[in-house]
Image (cartoon, rainbow, N blue to C red):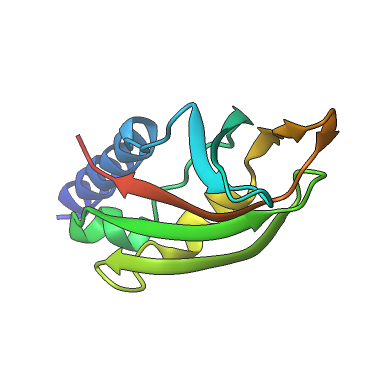
Length: 129
């Protein structure tokens, strides 16, 4: 009986590791937002952190998404980071916010100066494969 429990524990540990390694984040090379002139521009994402798949979602075999909204200062600092929509609600929010909060951007310029960007939306998908 003890051996069965140990094998079960090993199996769940392996499943957790595999789920973490093959979690499929959805990210693009750029996001779109609005600059002060009113134009919609693409802002290049130059660095993304590793997406962490929540353990609870792994255990329950749950997949979903989080739509995140934010603005960027002219220095590339993320402002007003928020969840706009999520399915299932609250399951992936914290992980998605931490993921997007770690992005680094190449900021657009107008007349040679970096400008802030508002109304950016980004969808983070969580999928076990």
